[in-house]
Length: 137
Image (tube, rainbow, N blue to C red; front, side, top):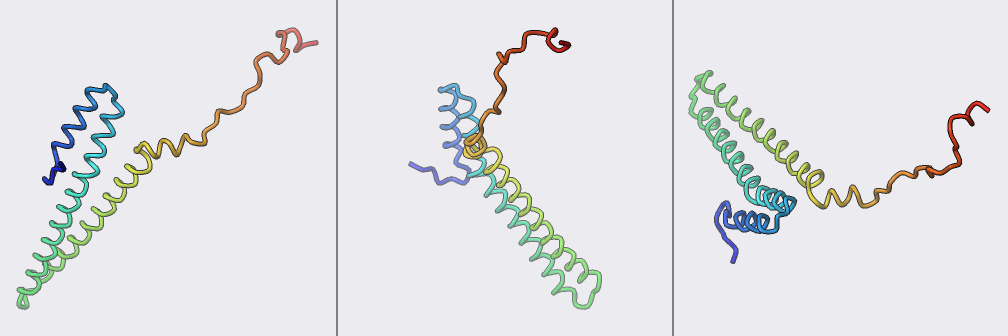
C-alpha cells in the first residue's frame, strides 16, 4: 500500500533496510537517490515557487498601496523583480540537479557510457624483440 504522506519516509526506510540486508552499497546509494529525486526535489521546488509567489504578491501589494509614495512603489517593484530573479535561479538550479541526476549519476547513464566501450588494441607482447643488443646491430 502506497504511503500518501508528503515525504514518504516509510518508503525510504524500506529501501535502506533492504540495502542493509543485501549488503550492496550501490543499492543503498540508488535508493537514497531515488527517494531524494521523488520526494525532496519536488518539495524544494514547490517551496521556492511558494516563496516567489509570496514575494511577488507582497511587492504588488506595496506597489498598489503606495498612493504616490515613490519609496514604497520602488520597494514594491524591487520585491517583484527579486522574486522573479529568485525563481529563475531556482529553476536553473533545479534543472542542473535534474540533468546531473539523470545523465551523470544514474545507473542508466553508466550503462550508456560503457555500452559501446571497447578496450584499446595493444600490440602482442611476444613480437620478436630479443633484447637491447639488437638495437645497435
